[in-house]
Length: 240
Image (cartoon, rainbow, N blue to C red):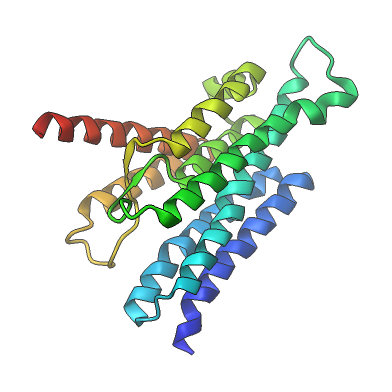
């Protein structure tokens, strides 16, 4: 029975990702961050469970990637699509019946997420860290934009509902997903504090952002992740 436990965790991730997509298209966009946050925990612990139970397999690896494609590939595209539709309401130009077409570029992020996941599966260099932005971190940023949709983004509300800003996010994050920029991996190999101090500290900091800023904390956490990775990369280059 234990050989099925990691796969059940992965499928739970996939189910919650599907649920988030449905909610996004049925007027319950505010549910998506909580569903994806829960899915992220299943994504974190499926690999850990497989290693601890000694049931790691190629099937599990492929299943994990397919689940991530929905939760961390399709979901951010759907969220950005909905945010673009929302932003059109505040523009002087009337998009009328063509709103859906003008919002479709949002799924370019989904396309690059698929490319990112495919590259990761065949790239042997990404064992202890990432090259390029991970799909969960990218998803965190776009989920954070929902705060503006709910009217709780504070001083960032106007920015997140700006059509130009949202369009600009598409090439920026698409590039980051497939870039060669080193990013630290936020997955733990064990539950012990020793050896995972940095990851746990960063994780607790992100939780603090969520407690203080709510859904907006997801976007802030993603920006902190990118910034921290760039700082670490620069420091390592200076020491080399």
